[in-house]
Amino acid sequence: MSTRPEQIAVVVPAYDEAASIGATLAALARQTDTGFRLIVVDNASTDTTADVVRRFAGTAPFPVELVTENERGAGTAADTGFRHAITTGARLLARTDADCLPSPDWVATLRAYLGQGFDLVCGRSVPRHDERPTWAERHVFPAAVRLAAVYGRYRAAHRKPEFRSPYVLVHGHNLALTADLYQRCGGTAREALEDGSEDVTLLNRARRVTDRIARAEDLVVEASLRRLRAWGARRTLLWYWDRRYRPPDAAQVHVR
Image (tube, rainbow, N blue to C red; front, top):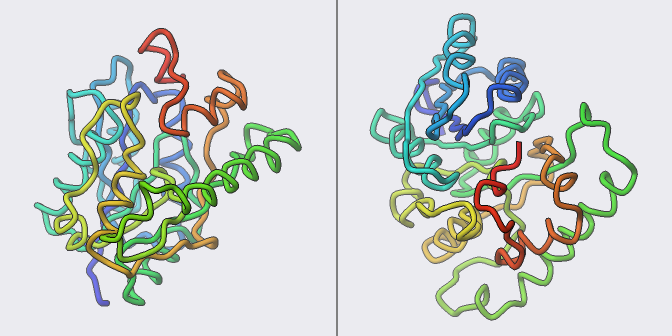
């Protein structure tokens, strides 16, 4: 698949991430493949997130666009970014989050997978090295997440006859897909963060229309441990398990 740089868009939803998005932007600037454009979706931030992005845009090795979405929600912001990208010519889409560090070969790797004919690529998540993860944070919690994903493959909700491909572990902060699939499957759910896992919804929408879905262990993003450390392992796992834990105050959903 031959693409021009403007046809590959990396979307980063951001809500009050002035303190952390700089590291994410720097990680994207260190990509071995900078043939893409970056779309940051400011999700009604109350801090200086937008200013950080604007300053970065002045020296970035790729085009940077700042889009605003006032309706709160990671899925809503991601959908706004993806649809903006498609409207402005993107053929390939990728997403990470504003507290994550994509590995230096992240864009090159996702480009290779999509170039091989996959419609959706779900990458691997590891703890951020600069947050000094403990042994348990590096090994035990990720193992629990993977075990939960195995369970997910056998859940009735994920084994419906209309699904054309197996259920795989998916992280909203590390995925890539074609614009064609995004439009055909209906895209990311525009829902509040506490109402559901928009990445799983996107995966299941995609599974209804394609069997070309890959779980890519070599597509790596370092994710922040801040939710795990704020809530503890049990509550965090219950949160990811159909939101069986929710903070008593909706504002606490957005851990900062």
